[in-house]
Image (tube, rainbow, N blue to C red):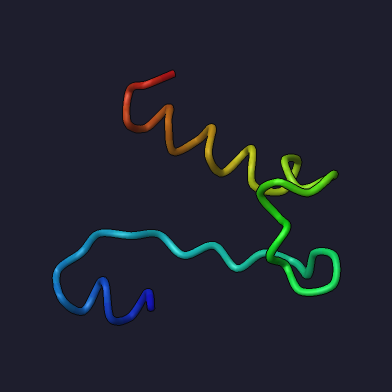
Length: 51
């Protein structure tokens, strides 16, 4: 999906993350997920001037 998006002109960053829970689908809402994705989101929001 990343390759298709960026290949058609989209701007994106890809951050491979470690395994999380049984299949990773609960990373955003699951307990213990925010320490993984939180710093990436914080850095993004800072770069965008939101924080």
